[in-house]
Length: 119
Image (cartoon, rainbow, N blue to C red; front, top):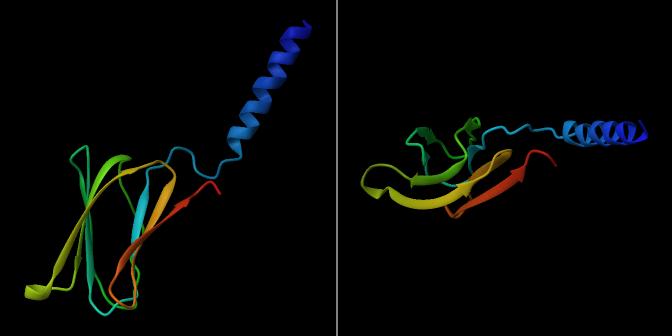
């Protein structure tokens, strides 16, 4: 009987640690923060073949977050429009419960800032 009580208390304790997480296996998500001088668009293609677009984020603006399936992801980031547009292609592995700010800085340089939503 004592063993059952110990095992039961360990299970309850393990469940309580797991329930403290803010994010429960949610898909990764991303947004664009445009601090540059050109408009920015991002195409997110997952390894499952789905595509999510964040289009025409103007200088000084940010998009809403969009979510997509975890796993292998190809980003196509377009800075500018028309004949002067520049495309960047990035392939990465995206994990559950992470969000990514794709930031275009004042010099039109792209960076990505990942944040664990459980922290």
